[in-house]
Amino acid sequence: MRASVHTLGCRLNQSESAIIHDRLRGDGYQLVPFGDTADLGVINTCTVTGQADQKCRQAIRGFIRRNPEAFTAVVGCYSQMGYQAIAEIPGVDLIIGNQSKLALLDYVKLGKNTAPLVIRDQFLRKDFTIEADGDEACSRRANLKIQDGCDFMCSFCVIPFARGRARSRSFDNLLEEARMLVQRGARELILTGVNVGTYDDAGRDIVAIVDALDAIENLQRVRISSIEPTTIPDGVLDRMRETDHALTPYLHVPMQSGSDHVLSIMKRRYTRGELLDFIDAAADHVPGLCIGTDILVGSPGEREEDFDATYAAFRDHPFAYAHTFTYSPREGTPAASRPEQVPEWIRRRRNAAIRRLSAKKRADYARRFLGQTMMVLFESRKNGPWPGYTANYIRVAVASDKNLENQIHRVRLTQYCADFVAAELVDPCQS
Image (cartoon, rainbow, N blue to C red):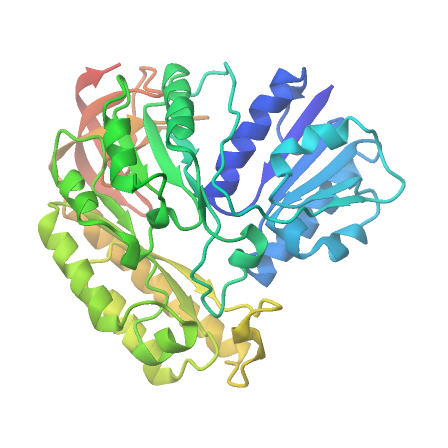
C-alpha cells in the first residue's frame, strides 16, 4: 500500500506530519511523494488565513482527482474549523481535527466511506505525551513538538479555536523523542508549538528544555522556531550568548504591528516601546543574533499612520527579516466583526512594502558576515550547490563534489546572491 502525506502551514504541522510518516511506515505503508499514485492520501491542513483555506481545498481536490479510488484523509486546523466546507468535496473519506489527528490510522482501517467521517473531539486541557517511534534516517534539521494551544486570544487569531488552550508536553517524553531523532541522524532540533514560551512541566520551562537538549551527545544545534516576546526568559538569551551551548543565536519574535493603537485592538500583551527596547537589548546582548519577526498588515483599525509606525519600527531596529501576512477575517474572531475593515487593495499594498523592505534587510544582515568563516549544517540537494544554514540562520550554498549532506563544515562567506550567500569550504569540521 502506498501513502502520501501533504503538509500545509507551520512547523508544528510539519512536526506532526513527521510522526504520521513514521506511523504509516510502521503500519507497512510505502511513503511516496505527494503527486504520485497512492492508496492513501493525508492532507495536514492550515487555516491561519483565507488563502490557506483555499490552498487546502486545492490540495484535497488535486489528490482525489489523481487518485479517485484512494482513501482521502484530511486532518489538522482547517479540518477543525472548516469541516463543513471540506465535507462538500466529493471523495473525502475522513475529516479529523487536531485533538485526534495522530490517531488517524485507527479510522483509516475502517475503510472508505460513502460520506465523510468527521472526528472533532473536544480538546483536552491536560498536558500530553506523544508516542514517537521510527527507524528511518533523519538526515536534516528535525522539528520537536514541545507544546500545543494558546491562551492569549489575540483578536485576529483563530488558532486558539483550531488548536485549543495552552498545554505542555511531558518533559521526559519530549526528551525521549529528541534522543531518538539524534540517534536517527538529526544534528539540529527545532522547538515547535503554538506558544512555546509558555511551556511549563512541573516548573520546568523552555530554558530547562534547551539545557537538557544541550547535554544530548551528537546534537549540535537547538533552535527555537518562534516565541512570543512576553514569554522569553532571561536565560534564553544567556544561552544564545554562550558559544559552546547548543542553542543557536536566532530569535523569531512576532511583532505583528509597530503601532500602539493597533496592538491594543489586537489585544497583544506589550507596547511598541516595550517590544523595541527588548529587540535592541537582545541584539546588544547576543553577538551576531539573527532576529526575525511576523508582521500582520491591514488588520481592522490600521490607519495609514499606524502602518507607517510599523514600517519604521521594522526599518529602524535590528530585525533581519519579516514574514508578512495580509489580514484575512477569520470567522468567530473579534477582529472579523469590527467595522473598520481595511480595503483589500490597501492591505496588499502594505504587504508589498514590508516584503520589499524585508528583502533589503535580509541582504544587509547577510552582508555583515561576508569574509567571515562560519559553521554550516548542510542539507540534501537535488542538483547544483549544497544548501545549508549557519547557526544564526544565514542560508548558504557551497559548490562541492563531496557529499556534504547532514554534515557540519567550516566555510568562508564570499558573496550575497539574491536569497542565499555563496561560500567556499575552508576545512571539514565534523562529519
